[in-house]
Length: 125
Image (spheres, one colour):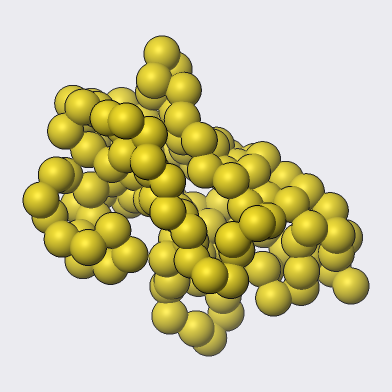
């Protein structure tokens, strides 16, 4: 059974930082890449970042480039999202997701087969 469990969200002031974690189990990791998405109130879920398990290539939405960093620890089966220089518009529920090789574009929700329950990030002004 595949499980993705996010943690690390919270309330932070603008300009602050958080480190989000996603612990994965039940996957053959060499066959999956991982992504982070977010959903703000009243808005659609959007792509934030993705990383390949094999090779570690990383990709980011334009809105977070230079502020967010996705990384992985293969030994711990965990993916991280370091979020720096937070803005109030970064307030959202952040989800991690797993995408099998060849499942479609890395920035599309439908390309990901497995999702976590989400972790709330709230940025105050």
